[in-house]
Length: 317
Image (cartoon, rainbow, N blue to C red; front, side, top):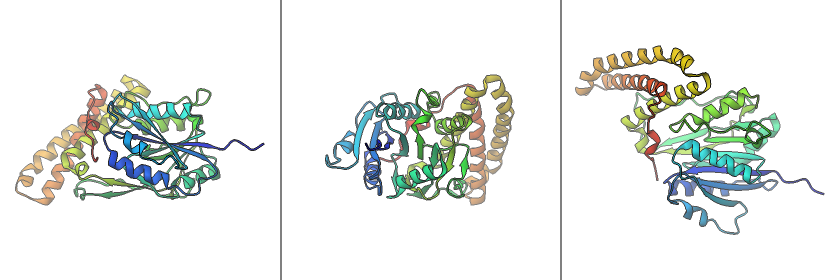
């Protein structure tokens, strides 16, 4: 008798981006050294219209990796994420891998994630994202600092753009974890894996499990970037409110929000004339003030549950 092969489900949430999804799925079908596992790709369309179903139907029937299609009509990232977990349980996957529809996986990506999980006895493995930009981001924008560390380095949290997780985290007899559906505007992934870490699940880093992401020009427009900062701040505060309660969260964040509102408003007022005159230095300072103001507004939007709608706009296609 042979042992049951390990079942792996690669989950891709998508909405109105069939071209990007096509590139993503093609990279998943090109994964190397996966013969020892049963690997399937599951596409969850977060829309009432099956815009991307044709991408799944175009996969040849003879493909060694089966591609399944599902829909989650309730618009919102955590609804789609939780649909992937339901699909994972229904298909009896041992491991679930999360990747975004605007990313393309390196050919050794899945094998590298699995090797790191095995070598380090991990429940969750997260890898790096290499980003390229259709248009250069403005100078006042701070790019994300990449994680630097060896294979198996412990982490306290993870995103969902390149992460492998054991089904133990979501099974009823395990962690029974789900994404917080109140966080429809971001941070649901960090919140999910932070809770997993607190439950004792081991999260580690896999520096060679790469995915590539192309950032559309629309995402580096100033107003779009400022809206994202506000949305992120609101989501972080709401996540804290869900975990700690309203009183503790208000005490922790209200004064910080006031400081950022005042500081941001003063900075904007001080450098706005120079921006109008075309000074690059003044323009950069003005937008840094706008970012600080946005973080302050986001804090209070999170405290009072005035939810942003950043993700109602789809970047890319």
